[in-house]
Amino acid sequence: MLESLNSEFSIRNFVDGKFVEPASKAYLDDVGPATGSTIARVPDSDGRDVDAAVAAAWRAFPSWSRTPAEERSRLLLRLAELIERTSEECAQIESADNGKTVRLARSMDIPRAVTNFRFFATAILHDANEAHVTNDAALNYTLHQPLGVAGLISPWNLPLYLLTWKIAPAIASGNCCVAKPSELTPLTAHRLAELVREAGIPPGVVNIVHGLGPKVGDAITAHPRVPLISFTGGTATGAAVMRNAGPLFKKVSLELGGKNPNIIFADADLDEAVTTSIRSSFANQGEICLCGSRIFVERKAFDRFVDAFVAKTCALRVGDPSDDATDVGALVSAAHLAKVESYVALARSEGEVLAGGTRPSTLPEPLRDGFYLEPAVVRTDRTDCRVMQEEIFGPVVTVTPFDDEAQVVEWANGTRYGLSASLWTRDLDRAHRVASALRAGTVWVNTWLLRDLRVPFGGVGDSGVGREGGRESLRFFTEAKNVCVKIRA
Image (cartoon, rainbow, N blue to C red; front, side, top):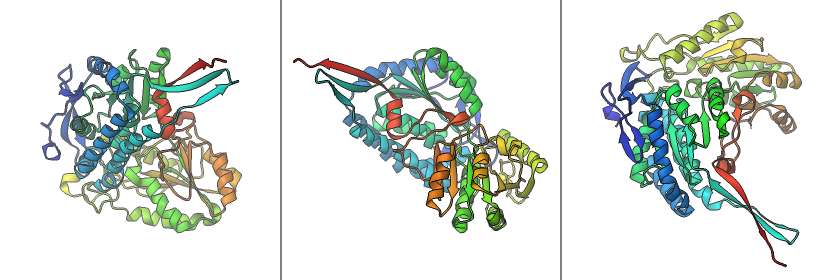
């Protein structure tokens, strides 16, 4: 597939185990961020395609939901094996489509997609139901049953990683699904569909419909025969999902934006804090919802931290995502680059840009029309300014000194978001105290992005609704039913 990428290459929707053209026969350009040129054509689907996919999913559901967990597990493990076998190809495709470095796709995105399927393939074999004896008069037990068809909408920043995070628990639980990947990064979803078929997963269990959010996303979230929705993306779009799903009383899980604090106390291991903060600020060009975009440093360590942090930022290599030596690749689109640049311009009035924020001037000819930006470090003491309050979702981070624990907790909690937070300290009592006080779904202490798929994941406030991961995912993708059996005396 990688060799086929050009303006003439078209992918198809995947419905009922077949690759099919969109009903409209219309296509969108898929632009490669590295060069700004078209690398594929994507179906411009609409409600007719969603209707066909939902119908296929419901046809497959009776058989799939009755398939023993052991067989579903076997098929998911087979799919994981196929992704792993094609991991280098998938990493190259992901890099070409998203702009992320192939090094990151190879080390994080594709291995996590494999892990998602393996994890839920085994989780369904070890899940337990509750049973209670009531006053020796009755036995109450709980069944967790699939709902039918899950609508799954994933974003462009971690395309295969997050698409599989939704598909794996949905189908492991016995549901069928209609998935919509981002129209900006559809290629690994297409490759996944090929592998789904090769793995022997029955037709209709996994359906993938490509296209724009207002056409395809809205059709999925408002569809009367799609009883649950799992969405990852921007907060404004999440609100639209709720408006569509609410009147139909769907189960909804939303993982939305973040403006995550990264708190460095003076007693921390500053060398490790600097090194990890570079990663948590600029990994994937800062296009990760969990990136620590607001760094707060205790004042007595502020200058030392910032000097080291700025030096490491300036040493990052920005350029060709396919080059293993590159640290920072291209942003996902021209529109997103323009948005991030507008925040850098705003930062010049709201603070001081200590490094970066400009387009690289030394890129070779093929890359000069790509979407690149030098990582930016902004010094500001105004915690209420837009650069500190709004999600930028790019390689832009603020640094701010603080004086005491109470002050930094107030500032850290001072946005409408609450997805994650990081804190750095050698004081274990402080670590527990501050972690408890932070308004966030996940708090990392002396680390970042260290994930265990068994634990709940999600945010508070404008960062989302609900939790996924481990048992939380299995519960979300099923409905609890109580059965009460009278015990004869």
